[in-house]
Image (cartoon, rainbow, N blue to C red; front, top):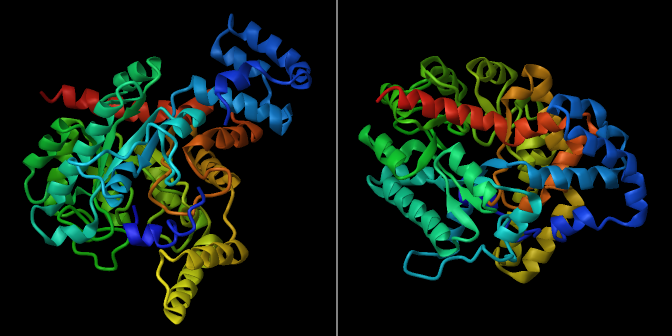
Length: 450
């Protein structure tokens, strides 16, 4: 997350908030059925062939957009989709949920936010990493970061306990696969900001026991581990000595090292130390946003690929398009002045209407195609093996691109990739195989340290 106010400064005000996929699959119109006749025959014959043989028989680029979207929906529901970063736990906290009160019911469709069970099932999402987000502002108060992490972990566990027919915790790729077979959405957890470790290296093992499977080393400010991409102050010019111990201990216990948010020097230091592949759980390509260090440069992408890691593409508008980011900064300044001049607050209905209309007229959203552009860039630079998805849903406010506004819309991205010539095998690599490869490598290394 960018920090809740920054990321959601106008998201809540301008919040832009599919039939059953099985019905869609088997009840196409007669016209569409005729169009699909030859494709269906080829697909049926392909069951007797190897996956590579199947790929050579189906050219998805020749389909109409309507046909391609139907194929994309099938792929989304037949393939595990892992999303590296969904900020539901902090959304629950900001919404006032506590362990003593009724839980936010995301088992049903919700009027706000980007994630709930019905929309996730529509979109084919199977394993959203629940972000245990620790704001950098808590770093100055000893004990507060760890306490918040414990609370958000309990909230996530409570969600699975409350709706056991829909959600299940997952601590390994094998458990994600088991839950997928049972029709449940897995809730693996990653901790966004290593500040919750505080100055006690034993907390690395503690949080592994609590279920954390990746740790984002820093967030908006430098912490005891290393420097942040958002921070103008560079305390260590990379990892601290303590940060070096943290990376080694994460390798030892089996927690993935997440290099989103860190400074370039911290990124390079961590890569030089780690014994296993790393991830960037929610980062995009800096070539599209040249002044945004939070995204990854081509040099860093190549270094991560050499390490065998996975870059999970962030969907946020300011992450994927520099023009949109510049427009957002300008619009934010205008809207803050408008509130002050008219003595309004963010919650005023008249301001919400004005803000929504102003943004639509002055800073249109990028589209799902822009996310595909980032995927193309990484594929062309280093290959398909190093790409994943890390939407930042529920964390970037109302900045998401058209066609990717919530978790129901992964098929739109898959359809765009099919249109660009991606094979089903390549899409499966992006959706889950690549990150599973890293996750399993981290598990295997840790198992050999015991």
